[in-house]
Length: 132
Image (cartoon, rainbow, N blue to C red):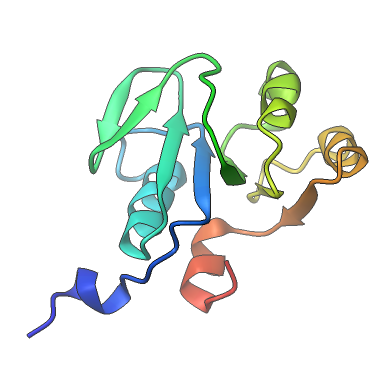
């Protein structure tokens, strides 16, 4: 019998996702996103306020360079995003997902000027609806 993980697991190696605002608190949406991304087979990297680990994913501090990031999903509010602008843009992701509460017109415009798609949606909903 297949486990739940196997039932949901698909191969998505070409869509590495960076979760910004990663947390070890299972009640935080960033934590749920890391777990669900893994469940659906996406390679995940994360940054946050403290070094930690969630399901084998190291949450790094600062602005580490990650290769081949397809998607950045934000769990940091607009007031804390200006320090991330140059960092995220330097990763040249295909898209940035602005989860509820992270919407930022200025950042969205900068991304578009750099040919990066912006999406205002919930990563968890997108994954469960099959539209990630």
